[in-house]
Amino acid sequence: MLGSRAKIALKRAENILHEYPRAFWVLIGGTFIDRLGTNLIMPFLAIYVAQRFHVGTTQIGLIFTIFALSGAVGNILAGALADRFGRRTLLILGLICAASARVMMGIVINVEGLYLFAVFAGFFGAVSGPAQMAMVADILPAQKRADGFGIQRVVNNVTWIMGPLLGAVLGQAMGYLSLFILDAVTSYMMAYMVYRLLVETNPKREPSKRAESIGTTLVGYRHVVSDGYFMGFVLVSMLMMFAYIQMYAPLSIYIVQVQGFPASFYSGLLMLNAMVVVVLQLPFTRWSSKQPPNLIMIAASVLFLIGLTAYGLGNNPTLYILAMGLITFGEMFSMPTSQALGTELAPENMRARYVAVMNIFTWTLPQAFGPLLSGIIMDRLDARWVWYGSGILCAISIVGFYLLHSRSMSLDVVTLSNEEFPAA
Image (cartoon, rainbow, N blue to C red; front, side):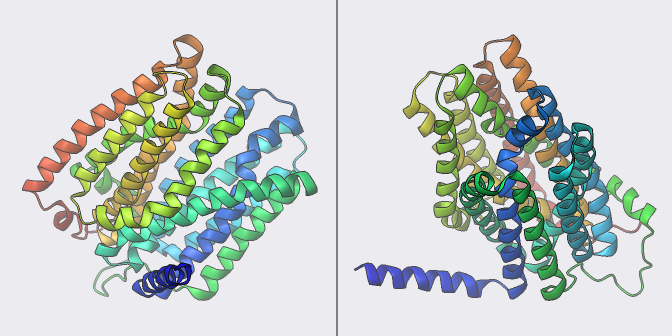
C-alpha cells in the first residue's frame, strides 16, 4: 500500500516537473539555495545584534526599519532598470552585492558600521526582487503564473522550516559570523546559476522603437501610478497586508510578553504555518487560479479577519492554533493570486516597474510601519486593539476587493493594461 502511494506521489511530482520549462526550475532551485542561506541568519539577527553590540530593542528595531526603507529605494530603481537593462543583470547584481553587504554586517565592530551595511544589504536585497518576479512572469504563460508563484512560496516555506533549525545548530557550534558567510555563499551560488544557466527574459523591443533613456524609464513610473485599476488593487492589498504583517514581530511580543506563553509556542505556530503551506499550497493554488482573483482576495481577507481578531479574544492556546490555521489558509489564497494578478495587469515592457510598485505598497510599507504602529498601540492602549484594528483593516479590504471585482466585470482590465505604453 505504501509503495503504491509513493509511486503515485512520484508520478505527480514528475507531472509537475514536466509542466514547467527548464528555466523556471533553474530559478526555483536557485531561490531555494539563496533563501535557505538567508534563513540561516535572519531569524537570529536581532539576537546577534543584542549580544554583539549590547543595544536596546529600539536600536534593534531601527535596523529592520533601515532594511525596509532602503529596500523601498532599491525597489524603485530596480523596477526601472530591470525593464531597461534586463532582469538577469539586475538579479545577479542584487544577489552579489546584498550577500557581500550581509557578510560585512557580521564583521563590523560597531553598531554604526552595522547600520551602514544594513543600508546596502536592504537596498541590494530589494534590487533582485522585481527582476526575479518579472523573470518568473516572463518565463511562464499567464495561465501558469499563479501556480508558478505558488511553487515559489512552497520552496520559500521549506527554507523557513530548514533554515532556522540549521542556523541554530551551526550558530551555536561555529558562531554567528559563519552564518553570515554561509548566507553569502548561497547567494553567490544562485548568482552563478543565473549567469550560467539562464538567458535574458526581458521581452524584446520592436526594432522600429528607439531605446528609452534611463531618465525616461524612471519617468515611466508615472504610467504605473496612473493605472487606476492596478493602483486600486495595490492599495486595497496594502490594507490587508498591514493586518497580515502583525503575525510576525507584533504577535511574538503579544504571545510571549503580554499573554505569558513561552517563545517556543510562538516558534511552533510559525513552523505550523510553514508546514501547512508546504503541504497544501499547490492544490490550493491549482483551484484558486481558476477563480476570479478579487473573489479569492475577498476569501483571504475574511480568513485574515477571523484569524487575527481571534488573538484578541482570549488567552487560549487552542484558539491561537486555530487562528494561525485560518491565517495560513488566507495567505495561501492571497499571496500567489496577488503576485500573478500584479504581473498580469502590467504591460510587458513595464512588468518590473509594476512589480516594484506592488512590492513597495504591499510589503515594504507594511513591514516598515506595521510593527511600529502596533508597538505604539501596545505601549499606550490595550494590546488587544492590535488585533481588533487588524480585523477592521481586513473588513475595509473586503469591501475594496468587492468593488474591484464589480469593476472588473464591466471592464477588461487585463487586456487594457497589457497594451504597451509608448516611451514617455
